[in-house]
Length: 288
Image (cartoon, rainbow, N blue to C red; front, side, top):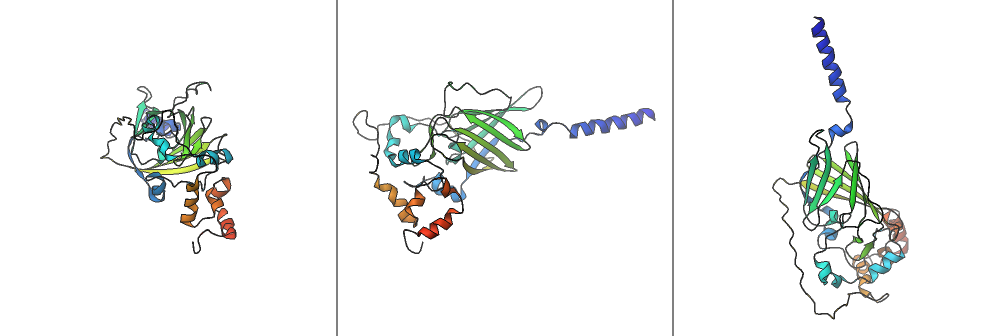
């Protein structure tokens, strides 16, 4: 009887210990094949944003100037044709996503995830507490990512990113920027919240969320890419528009009945209160 009583006590002690184990033993598995869900983001993420649309971006004058002088023909240059999106923007692309995982063979804990899209490079996300490289280390399209668990949410910290963009219409993001992400899984749905901090081109953190859905029939193929000379241009010429000469940036606010000032972006345009200012200043097109 004593032995049986001891056995029951031991069982409940072990059960209580198992329930109170650290969160690392209840990690969320993000691995799988994920298909993007666009919803209201479809116009920006698939065909691409309109020229001159900086609405809702916390950009400064330097970013606005670079975007105003950007020419879409830049993408025809051979060095741009096979260039992947950076880690902060690739979530916004139309590509499907594959996430795989590495597991420690002894502890069975997840030590890293690997995220890869169609037009991207392998992006490891380390959970083993390794330090980030020194500031002078090489910058890459994927950057260097470490992560930690915050309950069921995986929070990442990304450094060492090459210069990229926060919107595909020329709005830049510098190589001094850092990225924070929150990976959130609810069943077959994945939501990733990205927060970009850029001391060069942004006056406030830039926050976006993107959704994916698990797709058991998906397979992301390899991405072979060859460059071609699409345009006959003089050697060394880089497509651009001179400051103050880009008339195309005026088409976006006129087409959508927006005040021209609103389309120029800035932190103020991110917040709902800006709609009140728009009503006071009026709209470009009547009835919109």
